[in-house]
Image (cartoon, rainbow, N blue to C red; front, side, top):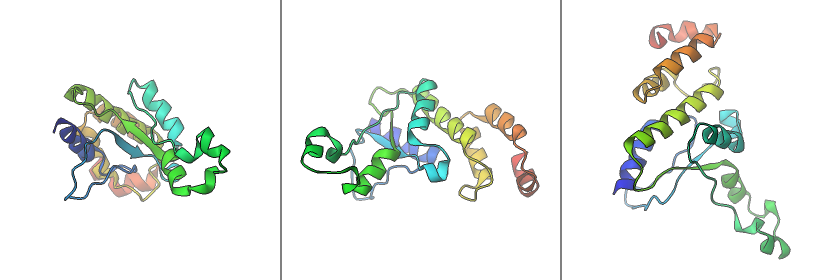
Length: 170
């Protein structure tokens, strides 16, 4: 049950971010042995590898899982090519597993959440329509990132956005 509580907090924290979080049908029950999020380079503006390194540099114990079997040396010798299973390769190139273990403390999870949100905020440009920034700010403050957000907002020079959301962002 504790893993489900952790997953629920992750779901709530990351819902409005430009990343893909795990989906579970309401009739299903996952063990949540992993909590993979997908970083789409075309949406986020950063590769999974670079984002992974940013999180590791922030002290977050993320990991890369789901290495497709068809790119293992044995299967390559059998003739499988990296493009044999494009969806498996796509997921492999996007997924990062966040910490989700039974002894994960609330403070530790808070650090994971804050670090991921800060890293998304530092790389995701405001000129995209993929996220509602006033909702993002609310969530960012909820998870302890107000000082970082304020500095980031002040450094951003997008007049159209400032005019459109000036009352919401200030």
